[in-house]
Length: 233
Image (cartoon, rainbow, N blue to C red; front, side, top):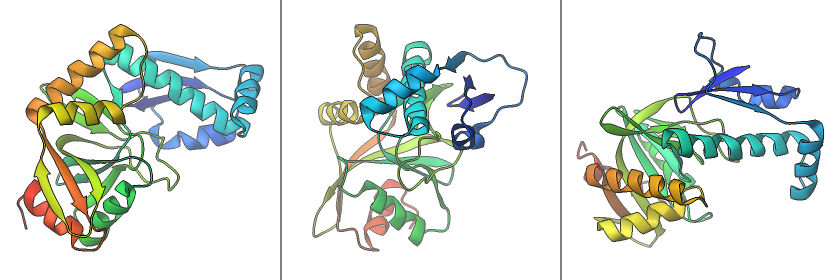
């Protein structure tokens, strides 16, 4: 079956109904040929599952993520970016932080407080250039809460979240931004892939506001952030 993820057409050959269901929101029925074909033997899946201590279908979707994200950066300069991404008025805002800091909690506060907000992806969206601008794309890998949609939006802002007793937001400089962006991206090992990663982020920070966002995780946290980021309240 063919799927379209981050504007990349991929054919996934699997015998698992759970894997088919997992990718169902990204089914692609047009006539474009697949740019990437992914298939694993039963032994490959079994060995990976045993090494990770997970079920066979979880192992398979993890392997697919690994190989799809490798293809995406190598061939399309599209980056898997660990963050919670929301869409507001056709613009994407990404919240980044180490696991457990509260990026998903903060996204939920935006959803709760504003009717014009929806999820792009709560865990593993992709960043890719389209025309002259960078966009955030939803992906099937939506995190433990399974929150996300098959949509994309131009990046408006990237926010690095810290917990605090009082809410505040400030822009950060390019050096801090690059360091933080690299830390939240998929790890790459080959020199050419690292160059592509850095090139994408260099371009992103020249066109996108990057913020440090200190939040108390109360209902007023997204209100004060939105005033600065969008200026519409």
